[in-house]
Image (cartoon, one colour):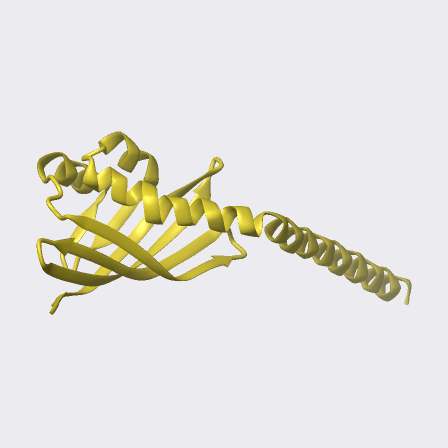
Length: 156
């Protein structure tokens, strides 16, 4: 009987510790939620396009995690090394670019999802595409680890 009571007490203590841990995680996430959303909006809407527009491999290197992978509209896989090489050799020649975030979500494990539509105007031609991105916060910085592009099409 004494062993059963000890076991019940141990289970109660463990459950209490788990509850407090989960509460701290939720609280920590809620405190910085708006700030983190703004950081990710800046990264996706301003910094990432700037890296491609200005062929800034240092900025893109900061944005992409070392384990970054991308699936292009053509289904071809790329990685961080290939993306850095690509922007060194391919200047953007469009007149304007805008990324419209349609989904920005945080998961409790420190992961963020950003998905939306890219709008490109070149001369009188408008092109749009859909993309989704997975980012993980590492050492205080959001790092993109996966991107997927699809639905590239010209709009009349």
